[in-house]
Image (cartoon, rainbow, N blue to C red; front, side, top):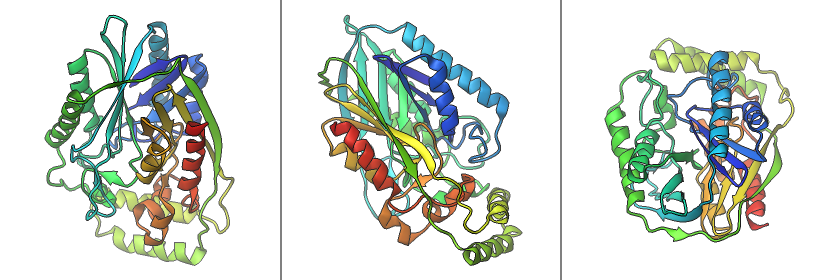
Length: 373
């Protein structure tokens, strides 16, 4: 867990797969700060504290995380000093891959804000990169930040100061495998701690050689907007047919795949026609430093959102998985293609259906207005 406070506004990241928006609100309320962005790292090797999303909920660990986040924010606030900010953006690491379309080459930037004291010493680095922390496969049973740990450790060795890392808009981005490959309990070639260390180290080295530019401005301005997302309609016949397929596939599946199928079958058994409940409610936010800004989105947004928000103004860092993670947010043009992110993930998230087509575009437009306002 890492925390940073900028002008009375906190940013705290938790090395967990998902966080419920109620958890994020509880951390913000307990902090005593003007506002707090609470982000999940989205490592698949984190504790299960999503209040029923992405696995069973461990109440004791959840309580410890909320307490630790409050304490980390408090420690950051009480040690606050005047600082100058600089900005860097580097490409060319070759780490991120489009997991839905492997034939497409992508090169999203590693972005960073560095804060230095009047004597020139580094106080902290805030960094973001859009790539799932899922180098490790389902054979790993250890709690780990995946490639992000060596990335943070490398930056901290270089600067002698903490690194707070935010996972970017990585809903369709990982290090080069299909989303469903993470279900299998069979060892996958190359998905090892050594590979995670190599990729994280590559990113840290790229930032070490970056050119940093001063960030102007006279403080930090925080703004947020409430958002409400509806769901895609589903039909009973379609759900029943899919359930039959999962049941048929279950016996031949390996233990990891079988565990996922059991979750999907239970979801289908509980599903009722027309029972979509109330729309999901969350928020988007922006921290404006003048010459740079951080935009935060909930859920698992596709990379398109990062490109769109980066076009709003100079030096925009984009973080996903912030202030609640309730499912994937694909681009509208991804819905006809289907796939795990569009059709299946809602079941693992214990949500009534996928978010309605156009939800990501609506969220991104709301965040863009904050950046331009």
